[in-house]
Image 1 (spheres, rainbow, N blue to C red):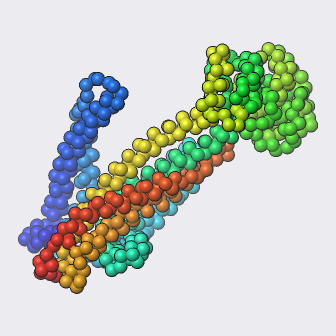
Image 2: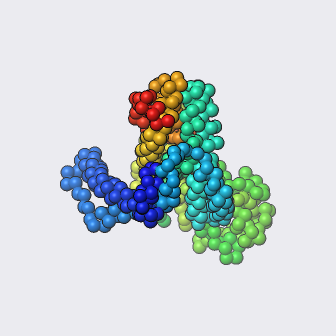
Length: 558
């Protein structure tokens, strides 16, 4: 509308009036959108309640309390965001010269060339700030994770500001394959998509932001899920673990024998703990097991855990450093009911036993019985079933054996991973709902841009038709142009989201637990496919309108 604004300036409108006129237009749009959004939101809330009631069998009334706060929030978001979005366009409109009404304006790169230096400087400042925050947050635990998240958002802002500068090269790169497949129409589409870099960047920004956030959360959640599953597999060396559901009450020793006599069971291992004084006054939780270090997450630093036997002990490096003990030394161990001298046979890095108890010292069960004879029973009994036994049959057999012990609680690695997977999948379901929202927003944005492009290029399209371009080729050109914009936002979003996810995975990791970086390629491919489908749908009506336009009428505008 540059000519229209210039004409207003010619008939006496000053810059302030043009600026306020555009802002008032945004205000009206924001009010209308807020009214519609409030109504649709209330309707969706009622629909969700009805669906939930039908699914659960609830018969209560559907309640939609629309308070003054709800209305205020809807209008505050709708109107203020819309007017804030219109500030820069309104400022640009107020700068249109009156002489612009006397000449035609064409899309060009002049605007981006004039601002690219300042833009690049601003992008560099944002990038340096974001990288600096991420570096600071890489080694800070939970606080570092939050800092890294802030840093990734700063880097995302840098990518958005850089958008108009990189649109041209990226569109040409993405348009190479369509150009080879579809010829001239696809090559024209790539050129058209990069003709107005700022508009193309703004159109794809919504999709890029949505895909970036969703990719980041999906990759981080998948990485955490797989890493924790691997840790569970490491901790659960057996198929089932029986523990006491009542703190302070141990499992009876006879239960291990009952489990070992089951036809489905291959082997049974027992574990117990006791607070023992090592040396002068160091109180440590000693772990005792009838299988040495089998199934324990302990890394030997010195000595040999295989030599663990009666009257011997293995110490974590932390405990050994505190007591000054070395392999071959004897340490005094005592409790309220017993004690003795134990020879150190190994040092190990602190890990965890089968029930997640941090390992400080390791002995055999008979050694623990001599150190703490009054503390009978087991804290955990692990069960490994025979090959060929199904998880259902193994679970049923173990549960039947422990039925006589009310405090016995049966868990398995499979059940633990399933429970964790359910929590993560619910989170991802919410995140993928954001994907749908981002795609819908992108669909309207691309459709709006394509409609404007068709209007602005009416004469150009007619000239191409006059030179031999068919209606089908014209529709194909617009479809490819729309797909290129959709792919631009989605591909950049996936790359940014994947990179940001790696930074967050590093921030989450620690010396005690390292998260592995895992990318769900199937889900990422689905997201890219959804972006392409949305772009095709967005271009259908504009392409149809362009193909139906009269060549003679269009040539009159050239």
